[in-house]
Image (cartoon, rainbow, N blue to C red; front, side):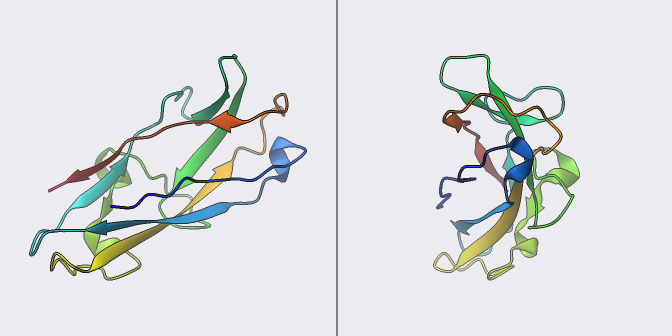
Length: 130
């Protein structure tokens, strides 16, 4: 599995960030379909994933969606999980060699008050369920 860091870049206001797009690649055992979930992250609150600035109480709300420009949240529960047959790259190929690619979009909540300048981070758990 490869899950690269997601980087929103920088912007002067919370409403100025562009959508970030990335791909998670998974190589699965022969013949085994699966689903992929993402946790709410370390700072989930009020229905939002949140990045935190160091050891402060400053947060930047964001969300991850199953596809770029989508409104379907990617999470670890029920229909918010992604099935291996929905991969954009090599869906349904489980030969132990070929990777499936799951491309997703992430967006900063443009309606929030812009927090202080700084480096904001969050960590999530990606789980694979057979």
